Length: 506
Ligand SMILES: [Zn+2]
Image 1 (tube, protein in one colour):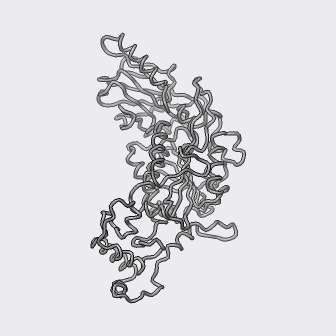
Image 2 (image 1 turned 60 degrees about the vertical axis):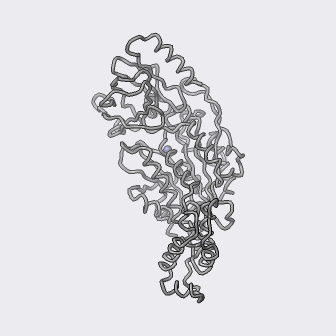
Image 3 (image 1 turned 45 degrees about the vertical axis):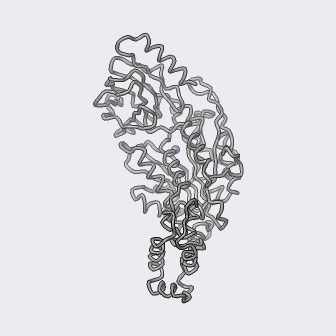
């Protein structure tokens, strides 16, 4: 509703401006943030002021639109009173968009420590009348809701025990924000991703995001991970048979909607990632609702817990905080992530504060818990976070999915699978799901079980058991049982409970 009012207002201004349109600024929309009263436009110069709703006198999240900018080459400036020090703006680059969907980095970004300013501009004029400008790639509540509605339609997504068919597990408290606006209560979402046709043992994985209101790249990464989990990719389909994911994408929607720097609207002075202390949660209604849902939905028991955050610390790599003293950095899942994302750094966090990661360890007994921190790195656009999220998913698949060629999903590749392959030889798999087609011998998922699939199966079998064993098998000679590959062992490895008494490598 803010946006509509604002457009009406802007049109009224434009109608009375005959020559060059006056540039107007607006931060009053979903996830927007600008101290409009202290910002002004003077010719080609735009002085900006950020909102200091968490650290007094310091801004952190910045997101506004400028109207009347077509053909204008503007220079924006803001002070460098940034939490943790202005040096955190060194090497940072602001972004802009004409549609709030496709984002570009500004050409020129410079912090002056002597002038205590951060200045940014482009080498050419804006090509549209309205431009959105942000500290980093935004992730709005509108985007959360449309993405959640999209995954709700997936056959692999179902409500959790505490949620309804709309995937809503509770309500945020809402409140009045720092500039006097009413922030309505928001839906808190939670959902489960798995293949319901597979009823064997499954690893339980909890994915959390959105505790900190300005940490948008975390949500881009988590969204891409979820998109991978529900995708038709074969390894994702096989993963869904071996794992169930509990996803809570936005623990603090009020702060996100209000454009806050870090906190919730209910408790603007508290860091919500220091109050995941069940059963009290220090009165933070949203954190408590999500925490209680996680415990109820998982039965207080899970194997892996990942909490997605973003950081503004200067640096060049994304990183995880995990408990190195407990050897969590050696956990097979994290080692799989590092195979796919070797530049991710691993830092120690001793699980002392009441963070989401500590909550996962203490309340769910997971073997691996981590706070994954994306960085706002100049030049890393949305496609980078899509790849990052997919790789988090592919690491789960590499760890948990059934071996390629295991057509009956019993954890090994053997003569029984060969029997499945030949039973369905030369048949169509059109109309089947990816996993169903695979179970009918369509290994390459091209709609048929044919000679190509025989070739793929042979390749896998020979790689595992040798050419001679394959020749004996197709001749009908029983295979030695010692040649089976035990996937079940891999699952039990990951789902074994931690034990304080036993020194385990993970
Ligand atoms: Zn955070």
